[in-house]
Length: 433
Image 1 (cartoon, rainbow, N blue to C red):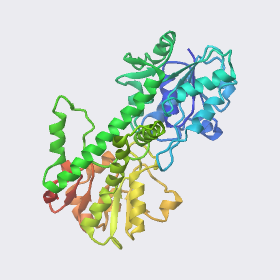
Image 2: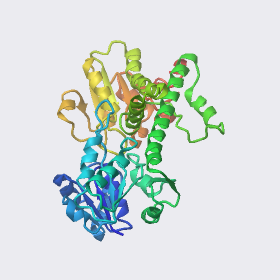
Image 3: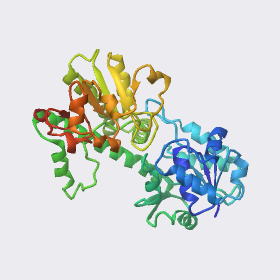
Image 4: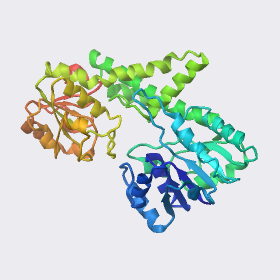
């Protein structure tokens, strides 16, 4: 079975590299520069282990990259659509971008092929795309299916190679055997359902996770005021069998824009189009947007006037394990601090150069110690493991005032309860700060 992966950013590169361990795989993207870099073994985004896996695929000749769509589709049994759907600052997805690229397949795809879509699009998109193909090629015998992506930035290879289950939407039972063969190296637990149900499952899952996050963060904000500790409350919830130990109930920072926000936006918009009230879904973003400002409120409370103060920001990327700055809460915080006259000193182990806009606003340092030097406060913004090497004495020796704002309690084990360091986290009772 020969597989073609169409779309080569984070999602497509991970899918192609993992597939090539088991199947001959050709991966295609309309951007020649992206393809040239990948042919040299350089992925467009940092992901632990991805560059090495791509290089292994190239060396074994089981993985090829091309910008020639017709070449990529020749002889392919399954075309896996893996474009990362662009999202604007309002968390609205550019679905037309993905649909246009899928439509570019139509003149070249051969009869009997399967088009498997994993790009994140609103429920109903796969059916609409299949209908468009059949309108243009009424004699075509191409099948369409949908399987929602399940990647996690920074842990994407693990998530793809060993998922707990894979959701697949297809209308035809006879298509299941071919899709099961494709997915067998990664997971035997395939949940079969209709195409619309598979699309809706992705929306519902991310909306549920987003709702869990804003719920526990609202509870944590109340905990701060009434003397309760949100970590203890979360433990009480997770040990209830109706909730469970793996529930998304760890109070901390707000979720950033992207996957979760995109699906909340999809559902909210669709409900409005159908005239269905969805007050819970609409409130998710409102609550999350308020909680995004928790570090700002804490710094104002702790430092008083911000102008002229120096704040160290530990971490700048969207998540640890990657080098992307897009939709990073740390970047948003730095821009806000800059607008309030704060001197910002930043260290991130994955960031060696800054975009021009940030270069004018912040000072990039070569180590956490340099960033902390002379700081009035520090914010743990991205949870890089090496930050756990910091000790209370390091902060006391380097900082002007050892104040640590750490939303997710990443450094709690070494810094909480270590005077004279003032350690502040989401859901922590005020009298313990």
